[in-house]
Image (cartoon, rainbow, N blue to C red; front, side, top):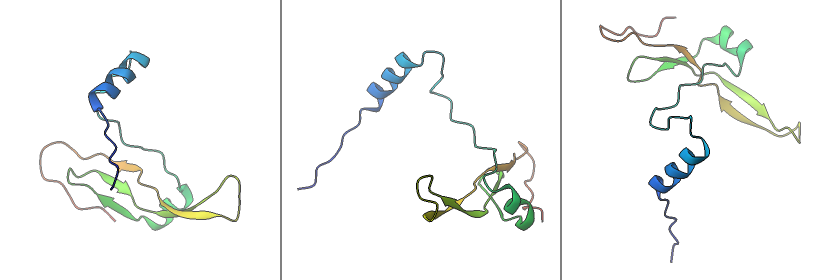
Length: 95
C-alpha cells in the first residue's frame, strides 16, 4: 500500500508567518532576473515567453558539482529578460 503524505498548508503558512513576521506570504515571488550563463546568453539569444508576454532566457548551461568538478548536469537559465507591457497587443520575441 502506498503511503501518502499530507501537508496542512494553512498550518505551515501560520508557522512561517510566526517565524518571519515582516514577510507577506500572500504575494507571489518575483521572477529571477540574474542570468546564470552571461557569456552564453548574449551570444545565442535563446528566449521564450510566457502567456503574459514576459520574455525569459532559455539558454542551457552545464552546472558543475561543488564537491566533484567532473560531475555536472544541464540547467536552463530562466532569467527574466523583458517584462511585458500591461494592456495593448503583445509583440513576438524580437531577434
